[in-house]
Length: 300
Image (cartoon, rainbow, N blue to C red):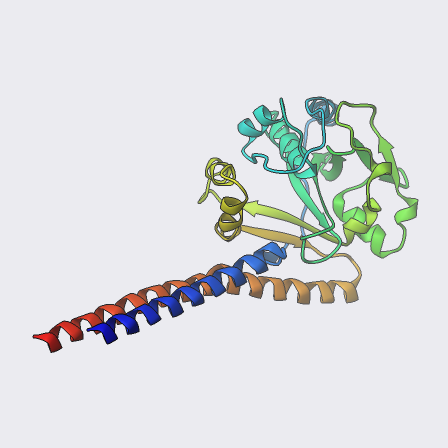
């Protein structure tokens, strides 16, 4: 009887140790920024048509958005639009918060737009920036709600992909950043800690599904750092990243390889490891119950 209890306790300790190790491994991969389902963006990525006054309205909304936030501040911030709009009345946000805020206002104005993610490496865990592209005259044009700028080259308004291609053609020094005027939000591109164009090496768009709502994500993240860390695998599981490749063929091939590796890491951290954890958990319970049943039978 005592021996069976000791054996069961040993099984429980080993199972818990495996569970902790697997959870730590999964969270480490997530924290490194490698866990996203990467898929290439369709080559025919054209912007939808827009009314003639769209540019004027988009720029006016950009200015109002940047005047609605008074400070730069990290830490928790909601991603659901209505909660975010209330949050910035008393708190600050970083580039991601500004992008989601501008994106939300544009959506409500009926102006086609999308959130853009720049990163200096294929693992967006360090040097990154989040901004917004707006559909203007059937072309995607980048309007940055963090620095209140847009970009030009040879008289043409630039998209995020234009910035990427100019970077890989070593022509970033020919890009003109047009400052659109003083606003309340204090970030300025010339004071940024890194050269803006170094971030354009990797370009992608995050696609969320409706399987997990922004309200639920905000609720989980509001419970602190531990809750946010544990919820990351769940949040990442319901999104994918559409990546854009530069015109440079050699660089494109290398980037595809890196994104394939990241997608495999996603499979390991978001799917395989949780499955292993469930198998270990259920297997240890079944083994303990089997041992206990044999122990009771032997006592009879």
